Amino acid sequence: MRPIWTLEEARQADQEAVSSGVPYPALLAQAGLQLARFIQARVPEGAVMFLTGPGSNGGDGWVAARHLARRRPVTVIPIAEPRFPGAGDWIAAAKAAGVVVGQNPVSLNGAAVVVDAMYGTGFHGSVMESPAGPWLAALESGGHPVIHVDLPSGVETNTGQYDGPELNTLATLTMGAVKWGLVGYPGAEAAGPIVVADIGLPGHGQASFIDPEWAKRHLPRVPRLGHKYSRGHVVVIGGSRAMPGAPVLAGMAALKAGAGLVELVVPESVLGRVAVVPSLIVHGVPETADGSLQVSDVLSRLAARADALVIGPGLGPTAPTALIEVLAKIPVPAVLDADGIRLYAQAPKAFGANWVLTPHAGEMGVLLGMTSARVNADRRRAVLDAVHATGRTVLLKGMFSIVGSEGGRLMVNSSGSPVLATAGSGDVLSGMTAALLAQGLPPDQALALAVYWHGWAGQIGEREQGLSMTADNLLDYFSPARHALEQEEEPTSVTYWD
Ligand SMILES: NC(=O)C1=CN([C@@H]2O[C@H](COP(=O)(O)OP(=O)(O)OC[C@H]3O[C@@H](n4cnc5c(N)ncnc54)[C@H](O)[C@@H]3O)[C@@H](O)[C@H]2O)[C@H](O)CC1
Ligand SMILES: [K+]
Image (cartoon, rainbow, N blue to C red; front, side):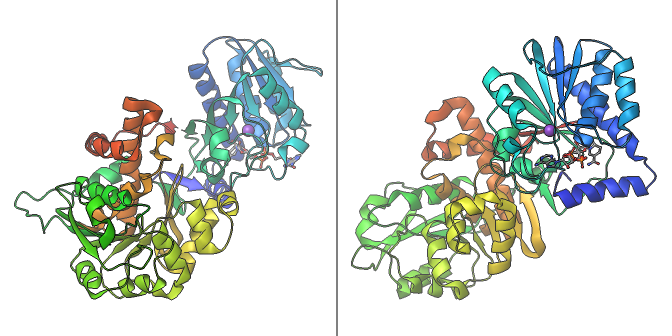
């Protein structure tokens, strides 16, 4: 279990440790020691400068400074009067070990690394208006390499909101478990690579990362005596004159993720443009005047044969709401993406059992009646609200995608790559998810495994092709990504230090 904590959960973990008999100073001591070891490993030589705040985040800094002063030049620059528990003693010990206390005006020049121990989970508000503001500006303009303690100072613990500058960040060493702010926006950008330090706190929470060992265990096996129907039958419903390629991408992804049989159901006038891949079966069905899918008996019949549906890739904005209402009556699990989600939002009572929704921030905004900026301002809350509103499993896409399911259970994906932010990438993900649904995985597991596998494909694709990766290239990396899953390879965006 690799939990992600809210502020409340971090405090609860603290409380639990303390009430089980661990004195609070022991936690601070452990955090400071881990921080010192981490700095020493990452930047082994040269002067270290600590910027320390008033609270225990600053305390972590003071303790680490004391350890490092035995080996190398260390300066601590307090940006506010220290008020953390035991500050007097810790500071005296640090000075006795040779830590130099910087007096204003202090220059950061000459530091091999600057440690940001100004604010952690106790911060609220605008960091540029706080005493840390001028220091962040100096770090930005000097381009100094920075290690953040627990959170980049100014990142809000539960949401990731942050109004500070982008720095030359080496890493964020976070204590006990990842905080939501580090996987929220723009906190995730500010944090850089996240490293979790074990400080002996209990490790549970409502949310957790998708675990490599879990992913391996849930990869569907191909039955040795299987035939194409026993491997899962996926039907993709979508396509329009403007977007004939999207259902093809979803269909190919479903095949490559192990579905035994994939059929595409598209408007009849685009049939010729969709029938391009011999392994996909395509059906043209009745359409509206502007070439969007129309409700028809043949469409319903084709959909009812599936083990799982994909509804939405390339469907276009003018498909009728009735389409979703008809499909909702078919008792088959389905992935709703793209315009499927927009239709769903217009017909909110139409949901079928076992449907999953895979919105990006914009589509999530349509579901919740808010802007994408508001969705991204509190992504955790948006997922919880969407699960509550729809009663369905929901994936909010983007870096650190979040899967939310019944009861408020959340899973966060740490695999992935910026190259996945490309046209068609979501179609690929929806096909992959449907393949896993069709092979019998329950909705939350199918989504979590798909997003993790898809992220790995993006990561490996980026390594091989750099930023010129496209969504159809992504299909070529399903197999190496599956191999990475089988090897339980660890994504590099979050690592564990103990
Ligand atoms: N989780 C644990 O068990 C441990 C956490 N540790 C570290 O402690 C910090 C949290 O410490 P806390 O004292 O609660 O908060 P901060 O250090 O973040 O600072 C709070 C401090 O800042 C003031 N403040 C807040 N907002 C502003 C503002 N906008 N402007 C000015 N000042 C502000 C506030 O009044 C407080 O005085 C956690 O992140 C870890 O780094 C330890 O490691 C021990 C175990
Ligand atoms: K910090």
